[in-house]
Length: 202
Image 1 (spheres, rainbow, N blue to C red):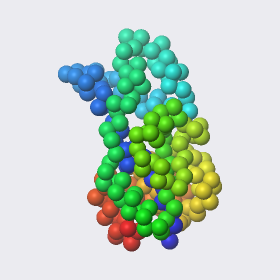
Image 2 (image 1 turned 90 degrees about the vertical axis):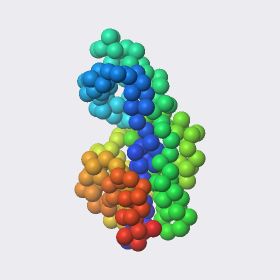
Image 3 (image 1 turned 180 degrees about the vertical axis):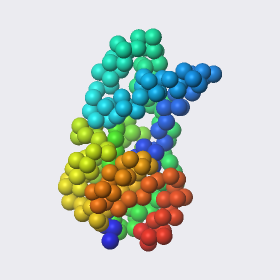
């Protein structure tokens, strides 16, 4: 029986997308944008900041390697707040309903830079509804590594079999399932609502 629910944040409760900045930076140059994200500001590079590397160090590392892309590299964190598109309202409403039901403890487990997470805390009031939050940049570990999930379970006294994890990333969902955590892979608020209702959780 599900007693505890863990939400991912980016892509589930918060709309975050670098395209909000880089569609402007690379306007009319889609090939340059593709190259930039595939070869320079890659997802692997970004995840190191989620795991605790400083934004200054990360930026300088790429500027040293790719000085011709200095302006675009510096825009990644220099204009990071513009990448926040706002709350995903449908999911926030589901969160509110789950919280108000009183049936569950609800937690957040997020890959997020410790330097940038305070911006989200100021901007999104619903982040203060959680019974606990675990932020990768603060813990110096991240999804999908099992120790990050294990830390969360142990910190809040959760039983994997009685915990539901909601994340939009298939890799993160697979890692949680391998630890015995029940999961829903999020694709849209309507899909999440339907699955929660079908299982009697909402």
